[in-house]
Image (cartoon, rainbow, N blue to C red):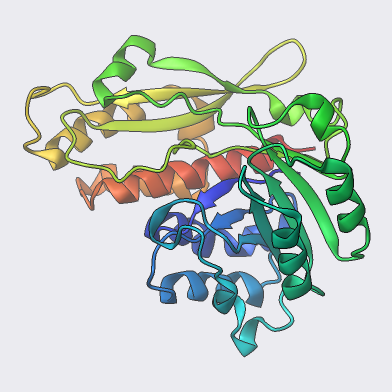
Length: 312
């Protein structure tokens, strides 16, 4: 199973709203959502959309980034419309977490399906494991890659590993040095490693930053590349060319990057009928520019569709 880790911002939520119908049908993808904005309405509307179609989703109740850091957000799922939903609740462990924090979460979250996200090694893993085993509703032990060791992870069952496969550049222009690069083969490896699933931060990356004016516009598009053991995921970065020393004319720069994407001779894009590819082709045919947020949305959508097709 694939667990994309997304933040609850406008365009990430819109991806899920649009994808809800096919997410419900294939049951291979379970999004992990971290609320990051104080306005609860967009987040709650997305949860209701997913719930109506019985789409599984894991909601983090103690966000670590954004406007809701360390707040408990149980009220996001308190609506009567979400009372019998398939939503899972997850708690992020960090270096300050003590066993009482986890106990309080488990009591409040039960009997919903519950998961633990390990963003650090808990100091008393055996006690934590014993506590988790007391709850029949316990779902997954989710590990953020690089924040805990292999031996620590092996103490738990139903393990999910979240790895940041997107090599984020400091500036968009830096992608010119590596326009085509390897992204991931975790869809081929996770079962061999005894994992129940794997995840990533899609084409956004783990770091949580607000975007500013762009000197160069970059569109990120994943695609499948054949290898000896099966198709790997690669990513191509399409960059604008004009005025690299100015933030002016973002629409024109987007059109330059989009033209390169449309010209890519790859059936993973040009022959694909996913929402992301259709959206990009529509923008190109109309000569339209609706902001860089929409470009991010379309790229995430395409990534989710590609992962759906690769999962077996």
